[in-house]
Image 1 (cartoon, rainbow, N blue to C red):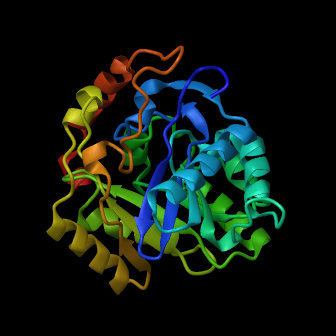
Image 2 (tube, one colour):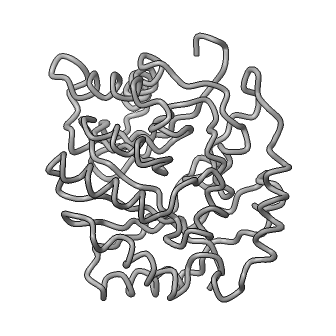
Length: 294
């Protein structure tokens, strides 16, 4: 990047096409306790041209290595897109413009934790599909997993409902990273259904088995991937309640490029790992009601 710092972007070949996972910031301020990017803190937001440079470089790499052509772009890399919405919007318009990268709007997706109702409503004009990184419907558990959460999940859900209606959207994608013994039980599935059921359109839930992640500090050492049978049971509970639910196939673990594993070790001006936050969250997990975690 122009300032000498770095971000990561990931090309994912899938059958006849490839998907590119792009970053919107160097680091991230949200501090999700299961995500390596959060340990960096937020260094800065990317300009639109720096986001587009990832797509340009990826397109060249795809041609060079004979991979399937790029069709999909997902803002699921480093950073929180809603904290950089103006530059993300500029990049998106270039991606879908007929004289730009000519991507289809339905093949571009912006994923966000939804920092606040205002952040969510600001996404309404974006020329892309929208995804909500939920991770837990229970307010207390959500704050443990996403420590920067400042609003009740029902408030965020209602903001999503307004946004989807304003967009005449076909439906929201909701993402849940499943962690063994934390948010993968029957109560968590029931709470998630209760949270998402009022949303307009067809809500699609994408379950993401947690990717074991070195370097997350005290909190990360408590986490293990949800067991395959627990993932299948969680999916079945949602399907039985009428929600569309898929399970993301883990890819890129060996290269530390899977979901939640992106981190630049030597970013210019990089902050130290957020050990104090990790220790605090670790203590809260240990003291949490065991029944709530199952």
